[in-house]
Picture: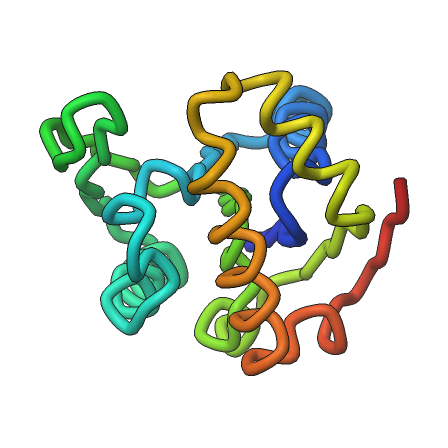
Length: 163
């Protein structure tokens, strides 16, 4: 049983790395990936205690070899409107801003941190998701920096990748 967390600022390439890991590791293992974007409750207060509690439930179920269900956030309707059940698996990859927070590290996760300059991260996200979210992303960059500083996420990384 292996728990992998891929964290770092928005636009750093976390989803791309998770996809590569999933592809490579699934040759000989069962692998599930959880995207933090599915767990956030929208833009405001996304990196709050409620998110930490969701991650705690996820890692406890995974380490106990139990299936679990997560609510999926729909960014268009701004609500949780679907569910996904994750069966016991050999490897669980959690990727996204906040994936490597203390509750996940304490569960034995190997933490990959991806570095990126904020301006490049913003540019990548806007190219991917559209200019309509520029104001939210500027606020998000402040929120994620504050979260990372309080959680000391990068300081606890097992692997640091710079782009």
